[in-house]
Image 1 (cartoon, rainbow over the protein chains, first blue to last red):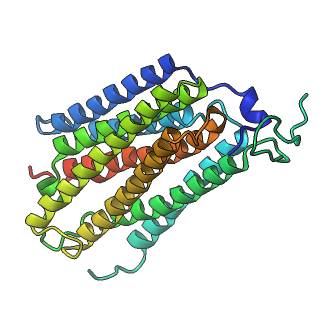
Image 2: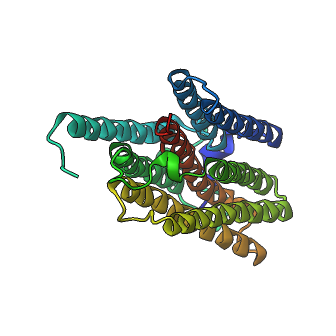
Length: 107
Length: 208
């Protein structure tokens, strides 16, 4: 696979930034586990579960934007990926709506 | 402004593209976009069936969250290894590249071994593919993810071997980047699985 003109003109983050992102991801995972363990000690799931979801979205975005370079790469790649994500969410919405609003499968 | 359609000078792999973007990278992003749909469908199915346990084990009763947390941490760190490998080959540091690519593959293999162990423990507790709709959706989702990790490890090993044989020069760093994109995708899918499949159901189905 050859390097194109576009690849030559766009730089990626340096090693230091990659390591920083890695540390942030590790800390966020630790926070998720602490949150999960705190449910046993009476911490409200109504607060904790949205917090878990926010942490997951942040981790997802850190990997996608920095490790996968979508923040720095051509916008066409970003569109290809986020169209896939949007369609996945649409599938989830349709399947969920069909399941909860339609006839039950009878398991 | 550079001529984006010009062929690449100085390589044996010259080709031109109308957008000036690598066709292989475009293909990889298109593949990843379609994979989002694939895993989106599997995660949706899991969420629909997570409560249908047929009086079998519940998520809170069967999952070992501390163990899965360690596996998750290892897979996340493998993503860091992957970008460090990419940075090394871009800088022409081939020895460092091989070290990081091997470390990434080993972390992936450790994750996979952990998943195999988890499945073995589940099987011993009579929680298998046919126990309930919940178990079926769990094994299909995590099994397909594991298959993706296994394929990723094979690609990493192939790159390491090619580099050892001198067949992966610095100029081909976009190959490493494209395989890296696949590896990171496998990682982001697990980031979602860890929360949506393990943490939230285990928290919400816990007794009391």
